[in-house]
Length: 404
Image 1: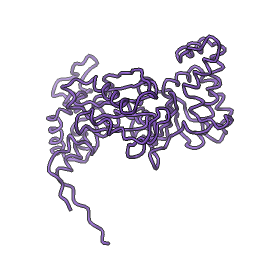
Image 2: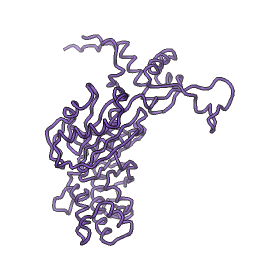
Image 3: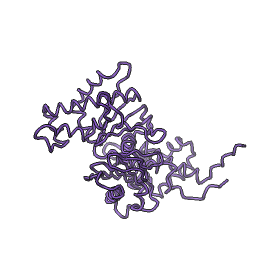
Image 4: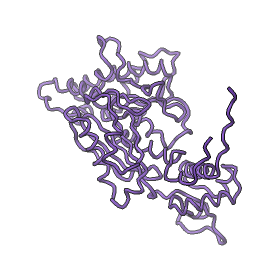
């Protein structure tokens, strides 16, 4: 069969592609002059000026006085015409994210700068709630923070859950919630404005995507993210890009089996339920919470230290296996259970030294700074990324491309 020559790009498609490139560059760099944008994009000043004018008219970017034209007091440093740069208008649009957990629903709203505008976390009994009711509640909680007049400018809704989710966004199984074989996007759509973009992702993948989103491609190397709540999820980012595997299921670290545990999975050893069960086994601790455990650890209470020691050994064993398979540069710990790590970091470091063969480099271990809503933030960031790409339907309005 003869090869078919690709159709030439239409003027509309070229203009659209250039527009989202401008938005993406301004997101990464925060502020650039028209001359700098023209050089980056290899466009002439006139073409760049037309694109910038269209985006300004759409309310997505604005002109500001160059930072180097201003002193620390905000006043101009010298006479003459000030330098002008372009920047995004943060409140030009918003993006919503939600995490349906086992014991909570967290929602967040971010702006065009990918900064958090507001966040909300409510208690939730996941295993006792049908999937339809859970999705409706998550959507309504997210929408409650959006003023009615702002809803039309919303750029999309991202939903995450502790579940295996394939490349098509379909939930295959959520063992901790008792759900399976359902499209969360289809359940969410009736409760959202028509045609609002929706993304669905595993909570650990969303957490991983969000944690490194602003660093983007500038973050080189391999980072493994562990999200530790009732279960344990994993996300893998390689050179700033989320690695989902061949079927969308990469990073299912919680299902790995730990040596010396009679075949117990990781999440049964370092998840919150097992951790609290061990802590509550001491007489008088029957109603002990994670906060109680953390307080006792800070006070070096013997029983709390014993529980944390056992948890730390299991975590070190897991991290050793991860390091041998993926050779990561960084491991980032997130979720409520990760709060234990800084209290016993020295012990875990010693356990790692005992378990890790010397020929395997030791990755750095970091605590995620956004402990309250990492997966919800990451889910919102996925829609933000879509807005800065050729999937942006708001800007992609114009004459249709010619058909073959």
